[in-house]
Length: 169
Image (cartoon, rainbow, N blue to C red):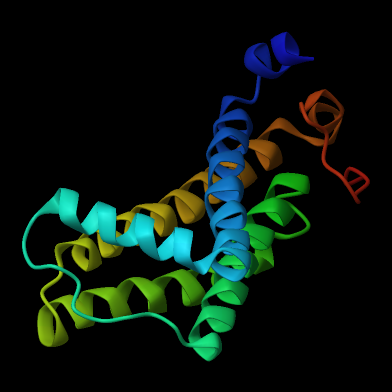
């Protein structure tokens, strides 16, 4: 199956699957850490901030309210990426939801960095969030165009196959 995945004719679909698999894991695993091991997540946050240099992070992050909201938001992003992996055609309408969630988060980190706390990791998170957003939009749209151009018979050759869908007639 792995060989069929790499050699499939629809390279745009393959590339989207690879990026979305990475993003699904990138969001889902940390969301679980935020919820169940917040001290570990916060320690990693501070360690990354120290690696980037600049000021030490001056705040504590002990609020259950914000921890649950952050974990839920990030888990939702992972779930949206997973849905797109299952069937980009059927779940394409979730891309704007991803854009709103991730775009708002990205702009929030940029705002905090520019106007509230010049902690370099906030700028790095803004950049990463913007890249993730662009990857989802660009790669899902490119895969959708490639799937449509290949026609209904080509749906049968997608690896992995589209879940929850019958090819168009």
